[in-house]
Length: 299
Image (cartoon, rainbow, N blue to C red; front, side, top):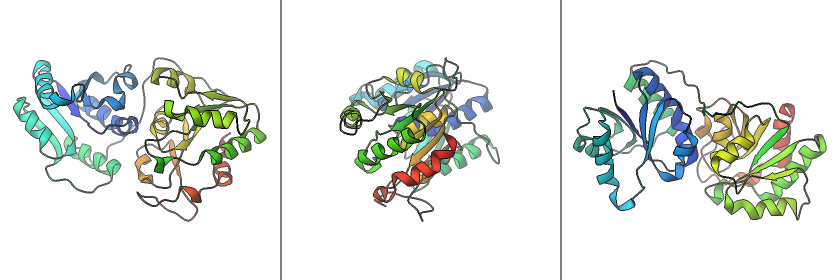
């Protein structure tokens, strides 16, 4: 059976949120899947060792030919069944034009739903499983070993996700005072290089390793076996959680239930908050001392 999964959300975190359900579909149907997704997910690097993904095909490799390429790609691969992890009619229509026999989809009309809860519900319905058991896991080709290092995630796809750099400086100082033998891996994208320089220069912090210019395979190889991750709600948070690293995500303005699919990811929210949603604008209410108190027993 040739199976396609269409997951067009664009982030690294997005593809990792859906990955346990992609695995569940592949295991249930006893067939690898063809994953159609966006280039920004860098899924071809993240999933290069995944035994359940036959191939990653980027929908937007040619922005002006998305519809044409999807039909062509599905026909060439002989896709028989599709799972569309989105609302709307567009991908349903394209699958029909591709002569896909069985099309599973969210719904034609968009609804406001929890991303993590709804994919759980739909996968259960698609596979006729009453309560799916998922195992978030990023397959990699290197066996991890315990290392005395902590990953600090300073990156973020939007300013509203980013805890202030001065707070990270204070948190790292607390960690160094508690145990100066830890290596501190600063994880972010090229845009966070300046913030790494602020931490190492202005705040004169030691034991820092800059991952901001690493590509995805290099970064994963570096963080494997780390003691914990603590940082923004960003792709590295999901990567670390999917590598079975104890992960603490800082939530002040994005939905805290976005990490509920993975028990390794623990949301840190402002004191008094039971959950956080968009536009709560509460990152400034989370203090370094609060975070250090929550992670101290794990370092």
